[in-house]
Length: 141
Image 1 (tube, helix red, strand yellow):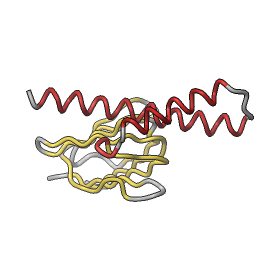
Image 2 (cartoon, one colour):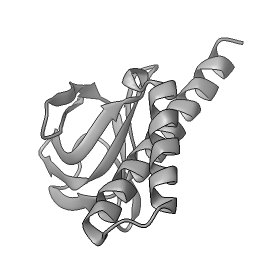
Image 3 (cartoon, one colour):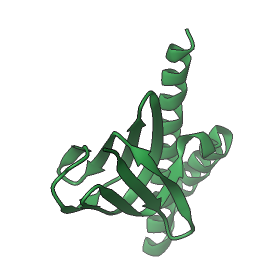
Image 4 (tube, helix red, strand yellow):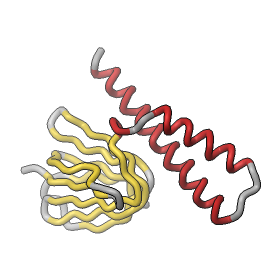
């Protein structure tokens, strides 16, 4: 028996597929979900969603939202989500530098919140992309 998982962001369907195991970041720490998991609705936090299917592993950067488990179907509704292979390291690095520079300037409360969110997103993308690249390089040796 497999899990079916769908990861949605406001912009699009980020991932849809089957899994043997899903590891999700929640406000209470990471949880692992296997087939026949009890029904669940929980808040997800900023971090890495890991989807394992056989020998394949997908890494998805997620920021805030909700995860629901019903029977063997998982739905993740995230404020922001991107698959690790879709992350462009140079763009994330540029966004990080831009946000850090803007935070050094005096900005209003509203601008500060937007800049801080951009910085958190770029840092998360860099973390997930770098981890995926390390795992890939180890597997190819």
